[in-house]
Image (tube, rainbow over all chains, first blue to last red; front, side, top):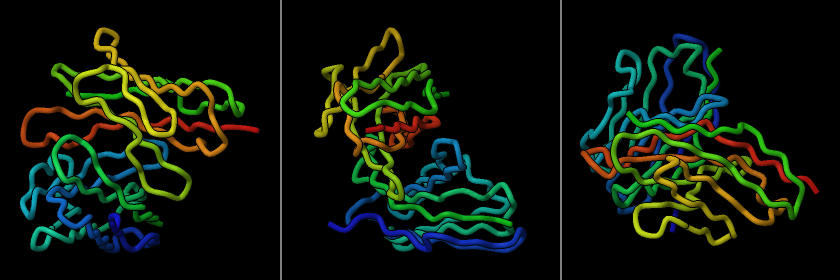
Length: 113
Length: 116
């Protein structure tokens, strides 16, 4: 069974530029999550989708971050404009249920200069 | 609000020694508890979980954790570690209630370094 796919693995941009990350979850998983992991910290939830609807985006900085899940499958996370403090690993995860058993991708590492 | 505290940021141990990684949580409601592991250059993987039932849960590679409600703890233990256990370990909690049941609150992680 294929795992959660993310791209790009690494991205370096200047502050105020924009960036987009893509995620393809495990087939059949209805729930998709984006987490932000800053160096030295645990992952923090940005947004949760159930199929193509948003369940929780309370911690998403909506002035600069946006996310969508197309047709309840793939998802993109966009940052525009980026700030220095957005440097982090962006983790996508999917789940077949709602008990916290998440399957994570390898992450997309963003460096903002 | 829920929170997770991992008391040690780094734990160095020698191979075949026992290890305990400590995790305490704070929550006003019942919780699900998890340990995730992140090997170098890999994504997070579920190591073990407590949802209900027996308070002692085990993984396939010899780790175990015990849910202690009175101490609000979920410490991870292994009686004899291997070099291959070198990784970062994250404790996490989620709530069984509400629309965002699967949302995980993570601790800051503990880096386990096993030396020969």
